[in-house]
Length: 392
Ligand SMILES: Cc1ncc(COP(=O)(O)O)c(C=O)c1O
Image: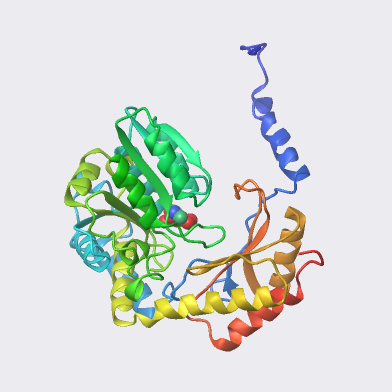
């Protein structure tokens, strides 16, 4: 391989010219992404966001955020190890752990940083990581940072995970999976994965970002549903930004895991703590969910209804098990145009296409929101169905 070393000086204006070349390649591949303005008041039905329980705009939740900002300040002012830990953070951790049935919890500034912290501190150079091929980008980044030996096996194939665990070189191993996969909304077989871990002395890390608030008894999540919440070898990560309608993330699990993370996770130690407003919003949303567990059921019911109706209309639809479902489009451009037609008719849907989808298949991604009325669900179904491209 020839390596081009430093050449003649280049004018400063041209040093980043390669960015334009890359942008042109993305444009040719139909992979342009653009930010679009968002109005404060909702002007369309939102089936693109992750506000599964309809709590992001709940007055109790938003009001708690406002009150916390006035009491504690707009930001956390630093890492909790430096500027101290507020009672809000402590209460949120206690209540999250109690709700999910784990010994302890540690909150992070996002689900992304929670995943980075959990993966890197539970693995390392001297260990193996076995992952499902379809894990979330934040887990993939954690794996890359961990310097562990990584085996990414076929999607939703516990026997492939077991094989990789049995044939590994390292004594220590960590299985990393989403509980509900972000793209199609299908569930991992956590019991089978845990069995494979136990047979081979591996630990398990489950990202329950899409399970918390939606799956399990009253929304306690997929790990609780699988009866693994109190397991000594299972660690769970969650985001506070989906079902809880706030912002932030958390790691839940055995007390000694939480101590280990507090003392060694760089994305906790060197990151400004979760903002007080976000902590208060998540805490209030959690309390609302405890009082109104039917929200979890409603989110699941809406997803199942949409999936049934799309399938009946002949659209290639995923088999959703939580609040996320996908409908396939023939090509990336079809997906983009389909999403645009939905938006024109007042329904906002997600559009997933390569490289965000590991299997290269373009899709519309729809999410349930427990706050939608039956009439709104019906409207969404009609719009998506009537605007579908011919060959989908
Ligand atoms: C499965 C999964 N894990 C982690 C995250 C990251 O969470 P956050 O948005 O709180 O950083 C997301 C969010 O997109 C996700 O879908």
